[in-house]
Length: 349
Image 1 (cartoon, rainbow, N blue to C red):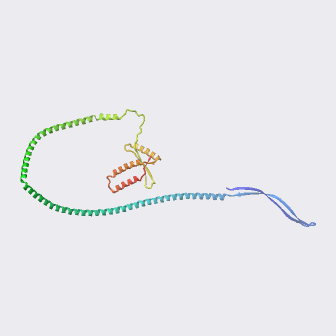
Image 2: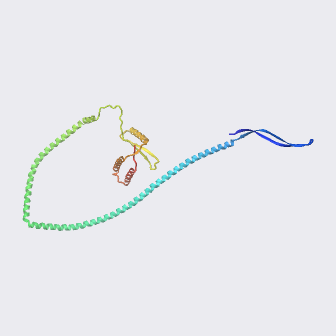
Image 3: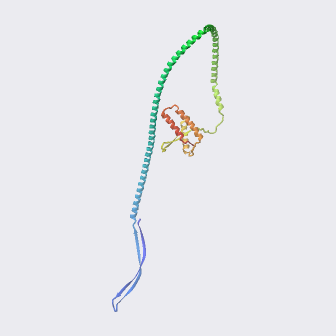
């Protein structure tokens, strides 16, 4: 902005001058002195328009530079973020790819070793089976020869013993024939007697069975008829005739789960409520539980006793679920679940 300044001052002056005059009579010269003050007024006009224009242009340039710096910073941050995600994705993919390749190589090596071992065991099994067949043939041939030899020896021994005690054997055969015939006649008489007694016994058993079944039918009818009165009496025994002036709180179990992905960049929560609740009640329980657990900050690690109890329950459920699954993929899932559970830190409110 242009402006003007006025200044006023006095400037003193003094001096001496020589003079001469022509001769009028005698002529002559001399020196004269003089002094005084002169008033001086100075007005200074300062024009700042070019400077103001340059300052305005400088401000505009600085604003443009600031915008450029902000845009460049945002672009650089976005490029850094994108590069970081690409590098992270590449590292994760490379790590899991290396692990997968290593596991595949180990599986192939183990599969080759197992197949080689199975082939060797199969060949050994064939050799053992062939040797067993040869031994069975040799054993049967040798045992048949000795069986025939011992049979001939037994027959010869029997003939000699029978010749030595022929009278005793004859007496024994005669006594056995008499005993067998007497036993046959006694059995016939006993059978006739038993037939009569068995008929009467069967009649008595039939009457007793009918009597027992009739009692069971009557007992069942009595229990069915008196069932309603007994149930009513049991229900009345559990109830008390008391008035309730206010509502009573009912507690139901609920499960709130917080999960995140491998990179840890995203989290989500999920709430589980019992199925016996209605859809509206389940939604209310889920909403209240999620709000309470999300706002809670006093999470703490559970005690060793609680973790041990949870470990037993988790192991029991996992073994029960995977006991019928014998595939390699299912076994790997089972082992991974156990390792994740063992390496996790369980927190509670």
